[in-house]
Length: 177
Image (cartoon, rainbow, N blue to C red; front, side, top):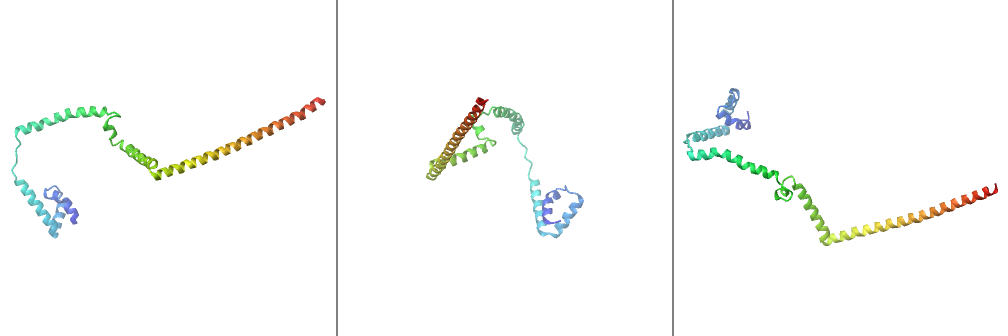
């Protein structure tokens, strides 16, 4: 056995809770290792000192108070349970509950970013550049729509002239018959 294993099981060895095989392994290690032997002797002296302390008997008044505690705990825990059931959205407990804290953190981050964008000089320049890009994109979309409208109008004109030419070609043929 190494020192770590002996120190881990030393308390159980001193109290006689180990099997005979394990106890003999610990005794063999204690015979070889000076540090572990010193630790074992110190633990023995501490346990002997504690055993020599006189036993203190609690007073009857203290015993009666201690025995009455379980009844008080049950009575005190009932309003807490009822109070937990009635937690509303407007209560502080709801807003500070661990389940709601990630939401609060994300809202805080959003508010910080928004305040940096809207209320600082670099934020105003970002706002202006975004606004400029939006206006440029809007004007480009307007130009495309105008061109599409012109193309649509031209196609409608071509269609009408084509249909008119087809009708004019058909009318004379029908008149000739």
